[in-house]
Image (cartoon, rainbow, N blue to C red; front, side, top):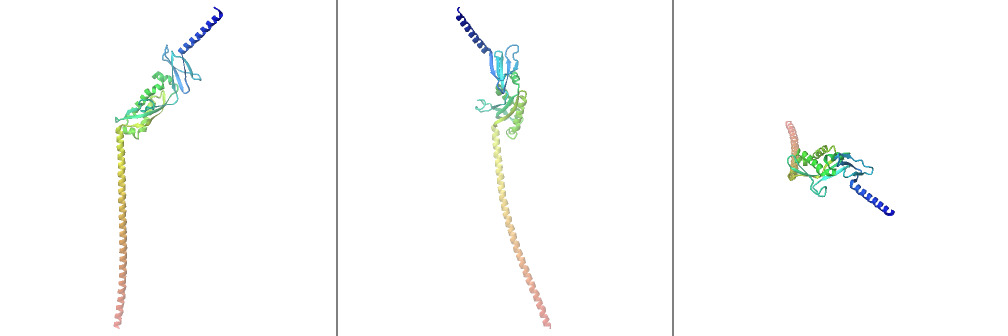
Length: 288
């Protein structure tokens, strides 16, 4: 074997060795990145430590290399997450995910519900140990079930009118407090809210419509009564004015008549006095 052939064989062997090494590495070594705002955990899949969960310490670039036959990497966001369960096919899932619950008087409601939450720092491993899921996997199962149950517990203490009426704010607050207490070891529940309001049962809609009509009719009747009273008061005032005018006219006539009578009496008195003096004077002259 000449030297050229020998070096050719050595080169080919090295190339094959490198290729085999790369293939084996690609088969066994996994790679992922944990970006800012996320945290991860490494779960042992085989060996004596099977099921053991170890927090991941990524380098500054977030790069993680691991034996993918031995470990599984799970990642969760630590920043605020917003989710919605609605009947709309364009929001959340294509299926109807709205929350259905029953009031204390056995009437069914539906609600499009939103939730704002964020995972507590360092809880990725604990969550996976208990639920064997990431946050994304839990949203439409564990979280939705918890929220639905909280709605039903709070609704069972209230009538349909309380839920749909002035008590709606307290109702939602109780649901939020219930869900927050359930997930307090793993998540911070920032807010639970209604999207577009509650969808009441037909009986409630009809009752509300009837109540509105009754209120409107009562107001109409009050307006009519007020108008009638105003008209009656107007006529009373007119009659009072006429009566007072008549009284004033009568008083004026009476005063004038009295004044004329007094003047006539005074005139008669003066005539009588003059006549008396004339008679007395005449008698005196006759005596002389």
